Image (cartoon, rainbow, N blue to C red; front, side, top):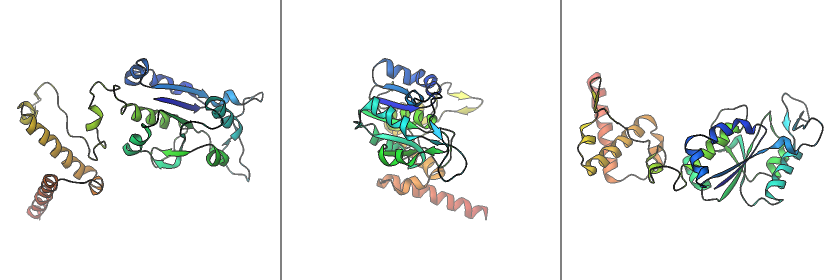
Length: 251
C-alpha cells in the first residue's frame, strides 16, 4: 500500500517510519511511504506557505497554491486515491475507518499547520477529513503517523503473527484480553492456571470472557453496538448480578 504524506516537516516523520515494524514492512515492499515537503512548491523567495486570514483574527492560514501544486504535481490533476486532510473537524479515526481505508492501494494524507487550511483546500482538493480525537495538536504529522501505523497493521504480512491484528482491542468490537509471559510466578503473582493447562478450548473461552469483562468495566458503550452470542449475554449478566450482590452486601 502506498502512502503519500504532504507536510511542512517531513523530517519529523522519518524516524518513526524508519524503525521497527514499519521499517520492516517498507523493506519487504508491503508499504511504500513518500514524504512531500509542501514548501518545495512555494515559489516566492521565502517559500511562503501561510498568510494572515481575511477578516482578521489570530494565527496564520495555509495557502492554497503550494498545496494544490504539490498534490497535482505528485498525483495528477485528478488524484487516483483519497486525499485526506488531518484536522480536528474530520470524522473520528477508528478501527472501522482503518479497515475501510486499507482497502485502497494508495491514499494521500495532508498534514496541516498553523490555524488551519484555506477553505478552498477543503472544498476542492480534499475528498475526506480525519480526526484522531477531540483535541488539538500543533500539526498533522502525528495523526499521519497514527493512520499509517494503524493501516499497516492490517496489511497481510506486516505483523509476525498472521492473525495478530484480529485480537487487538477494538478489532472485534471488544477490548483485548490480558496477556502473560514467563515466569509463571512473579512476586507471588501467578499466571492464571487456565493459561498453563494446554487446553486450547478453555483458554479461548477464558480470553473471550476476559475481553467481555474488560469491555464492560472500561468501555461499556462498545457493547451496545456489538452483536452478542447467547453465551456472551449470559456471562455479562452473571457479572452484573455479582456486582449487584456485592453492592447489596456493602449496604
